[in-house]
Length: 68
Image (cartoon, rainbow, N blue to C red; front, side, top):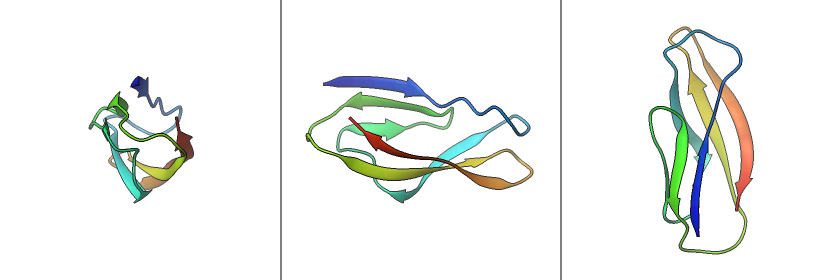
């Protein structure tokens, strides 16, 4: 199933960097440097992961999520 979502920080100072801090995205999905998670999932189920946000000043954990 195709999937796409963009993470949008509401605090901090651009430019932002995003990375998977813990866990893993579902197989077939990827997180790019601009904060977009996209791709086509190849496995059904819950896949927990944490996304880290860097804003050039500090690193923060942005979100914990269970992707579709």
